[in-house]
Length: 186
Ligand SMILES: [Fe+2]
Ligand SMILES: [Fe+2]
Image (tube, rainbow, N blue to C red; front, side, top):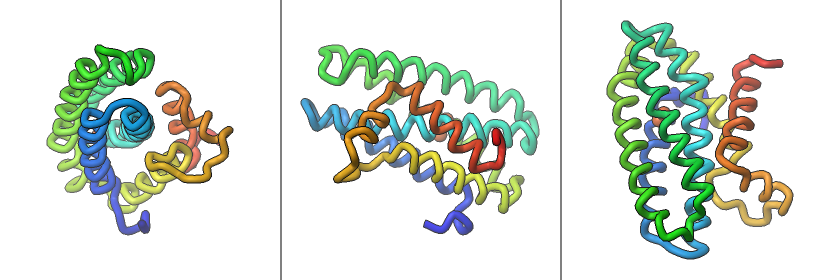
């Protein structure tokens, strides 16, 4: 995809759909297939929510009327989702309580995504600078490259281990990649 042609709102809305699909996949599978799908969900959520924290909410504070309150609400939801995700990750996908907790996370994450689309994304599309929105897409793509959300056959085992880290470690790496791509933290 050409980052120049895609603003970050369209990109993140597509990720919301992918997140929804991955929740369905994790729910519908078990055993090794569930574990593999759950790893992809962890990576996608880690990259996605970190990108929103680093890029979207700060920009909403800048350009949207009442943006501070809106961004604070979204950050609260994200922190709650991160806690639930870390708990699920520790629990492991073969734990008997996993489906119940996955469902709690799914409901929270999807409600959060709807609130972002309604209270943030619509405003950014109208009031944001198109060049800046496109640059943000490139930054999310840089973070995605660091933590691929689709299976990569033939990936070296060392890289694979890196990608299997806990959510917080993936978020740290995603944050670094995003800041570097935006020209900060150098
Ligand atoms: Fe978010
Ligand atoms: Fe989101």
